[in-house]
Length: 119
Image 1: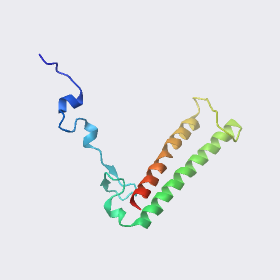
Image 2: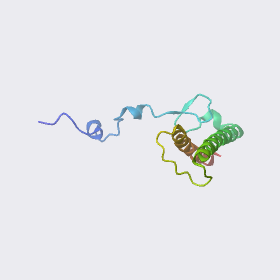
Image 3: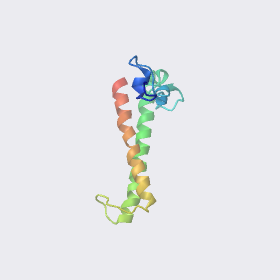
Image 4: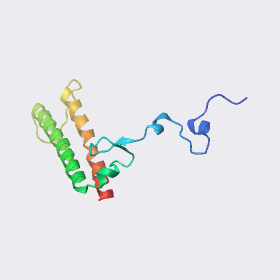
């Protein structure tokens, strides 16, 4: 008797069929904020306007960096030092906001790769 369970790949077989829900919803919104769905990061319509792409992504990058720096300044004022932050207060909401802003900064690298790839 064959067991009634197995891995997703075993159940789908080796034919390359989609085996997880997330594979059916793998499209993302265009990073230029036009509202279109694309798998390439930047939709074909936005790719036709290179200047708009560069300006929009530069503005978004600057906003993320500015938000991170402002939050970091609040944290530095609380810690009382300008160098590396060594806050260990798990009750501090600024610490969690700062970590979220730090993670958001990783988007900039992705946007830069998209610009290098397409332009």
